[in-house]
Length: 150
Image (cartoon, rainbow, N blue to C red; front, side, top):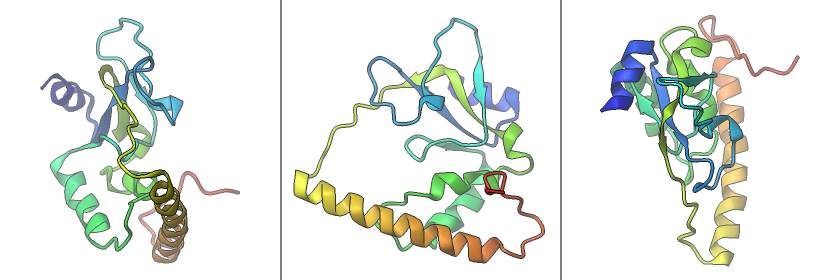
């Protein structure tokens, strides 16, 4: 409930709780909690991980269509595009709530051989999704890719 209160007061359309930096497997340090004791501190950025996102109603309606159109097994790459659904400036409307955090244990549920196959397929599909996204947004006037390489 506190997470919801914070994101409403901060105007975040897409957010996630930070990850406990000690107890969690952290793949992206930007989402690890800084735990400096400042109330309601959040890390402002334009990206949240697919692991534990929280969406406003408007953002969810947008993300739902991205997800429902996705024929991939693992959804890698979707989190890179969440900002498209942020109802405005994703550098202001997307963020990690630092004072609220979760633990990501990173427990594997697949056998080692299956993990390798899923990971390999996920990389292939992430590239496919990226190409589809690029094709779809090439001429879109309402979309600006802040990650675009110059």
